[in-house]
Length: 277
Image (cartoon, rainbow, N blue to C red; front, side, top):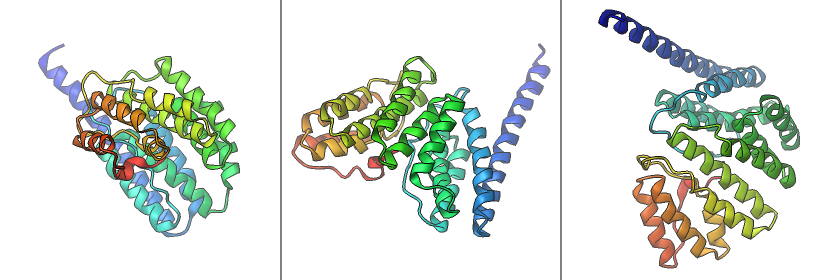
């Protein structure tokens, strides 16, 4: 292939990727406008389409830096709009996992606003979707919905289905795979705690730091919800060991700060990293 042809092909690929990003950005803008108009059902349908489009991108190589998903609860229209704006910014920055997480939480809030589903109905719907798609992301959402609805046995079943797929090598994209695995085991441990199974929760905490990328991810903040809960139950040594292992996941200075606090008998402020996701 000539140098000119290579340049044309590269330009074509770049333009296709840019078109895709602009399309999803415009979809998110349209969803925000529908929410402002109170058209929650229409916004919900469009949200599903966007989720699937971004999920399709997760099938390919991901960027080197993927920020940790944020999972602040969204309860009213203004908060849902804020959440979609965050997802738009995260998608533009190519933080696909974070964008998906924000959209997923906003989607559930839209359902509540429209009065379409109770938490139990959401759990039923999400597990049906997971069975249909048979993809780690959907099994994670099914586990999270069941956990939120208080169906801990169902949540655990979905959680292990996600973990089994990850163990089988579903994701092999370095930092993204490490992030997804860490998030999966964290939710698994939170479910174990809800079932008062502290030994299994501690095992989940340890497992969540095992899948490390080749090099620590720049400023990535691992999920800390399980670490916070176990620390509150006196499992200081397990949390300290976990934080030490997290150094292989990220170069974030907060890890060292948190470990120092834990080792000195204090309880660090994990901030947004302690949200259940």
